[in-house]
Each structure stands twice: as structure tokens, then as C-alpha cells.
Length: 194
Image 1 (spheres, rainbow, N blue to C red):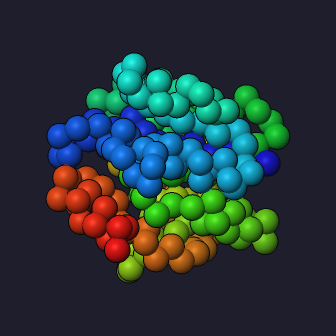
Image 2 (cartoon, rainbow, N blue to C red):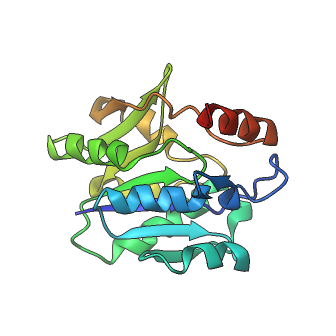
């Protein structure tokens, strides 16, 4: 059983508004991520959000577990830990995929391919775009203790390099496209409408 944790509690400080609620392909960026996760057929799906009513309204109708991060000032690691803690009690969960809500080209297929590699016997599976590894990434339960030790505004990428001998990657060519500023959002929206 593979769980998914969607990290969506960021402040979007460079964007100037909540990226979770940005319009994208007739929905919001956050809902697009949720739909991709649901399309993968993995469960449970945990969505980590800030304690903000408008974001809660967007997610409350979906068949997901909602985790409210009251400590997002501690950085993305606080969301990673919170999401992991939500699935720890489920002994059937063998692995977790961490994903974010600002990769507009995420798809269920990308998430399924991570799981396929895991089922081939790989303990850590990540995405490769350009010359780097990045999210979404899958970690087997063996690494949950390491994940729960993460601190600050650094994600689990350091674990990919710490355990790179256990790590394989799949291509996600548009994985490097994310939204941090309004200029990026406008450019990506124009690309999508071409």
C-alpha cells in the first residue's frame, strides 16, 4: 500500500497570493494535485494545508485526509513530518509519495510510475528533470524515521543524496515547472493555452 502526502501549507510569499487557490485548467492548483493523487489509485491521501478557511473549503469535499499545519513557520519539514505522522498508524502503508501543489503538470501517470519502480524492488524513487532530482518522490517505510527527523525549510531532497545508492529516478520532463511568482504563473498559463 502506497500513501500520498500533498504538501500545500506554504505561504506563497513570493507570489503575493495563495498559490493553492490559483486557477488552473478549470480548477485550482491544489485540486489538480488532489485529482492526480486520486487518479493514481494510491491511498490514503493526506493533504497538508495551513489553518485558512478558504483553502479548507477547496479540499473538504474530496475523499482525503486533511492535516492542518499550525507550525508552517518552521518550514516545509513541518509539513513533511505532519503528513508522515498521519500515515504512521496505518501498518498497511509500505511507502509514501511526497508531492506539492505547485507543479501544474503533475499527473496520475507520474505517480503510478513511481509506484511501479518501488514494486520492482527499489526503496527510494524520485523524479528527474533537467540535471536534478526532485519531488514527487517515494520513500519506503524503512526511511520514515529519517523523514521524521527533518528540520527547517529543507525538504526530503537531502535524503535522496544521503541514500543515493538506494535511489532510482523516473523522468518527469515538466517537473521543473512550478509556480513561485506571478510572472511564472502568467507564462505557464500562456503555454498551457497554446
